[in-house]
Image 1 (spheres, rainbow, N blue to C red):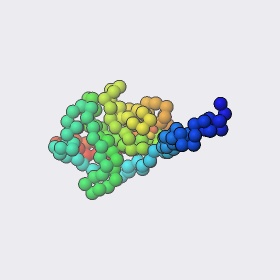
Image 2 (image 1 turned 60 degrees about the horizontal axis):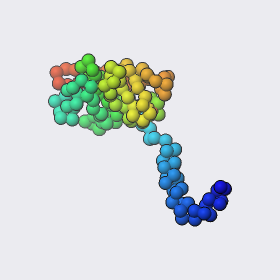
Image 3 (image 1 turned 30 degrees about the vertical axis):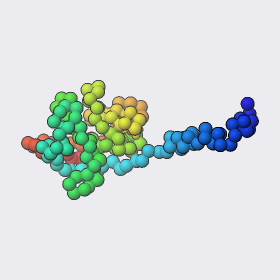
Image 4 (image 1 turned 90 degrees about the vertical axis):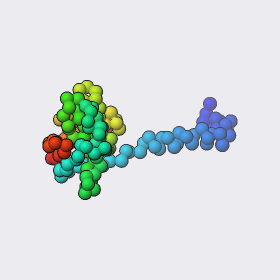
Length: 152
Ligand code: FES
């Protein structure tokens, strides 16, 4: 059946109703996800006793930090890895700079981008093809009592 004939048989309204959802979803699918700058000049401290940092009490737990107390832009993920060490990385993925990096307790503990499922070792090395030449930015951590310093 030719397109013209199909449209004539369906009637204009029905054809529009069939096509409209596709037009909407297709345009959404083709949009680029928003991108963000990788944090630089990072040097701040968090108090592990604060309630928002409670996930760091457990191995595999993580938190996301958008800014420090001075409201400096950060976008960092801090995690307690499966060995109990505190590690930190940029939440900005090295693939397309979305702010979707989290920590997952799979494969020994990896940083994971939920946008296209890229995985990174805890030293930032890419573990898949999306980002082989672009490691994830990793930050140093230093623990003094209940205070965790995160810095470059
Ligand atoms: S933006 Fe992170 S995997 Fe594509």
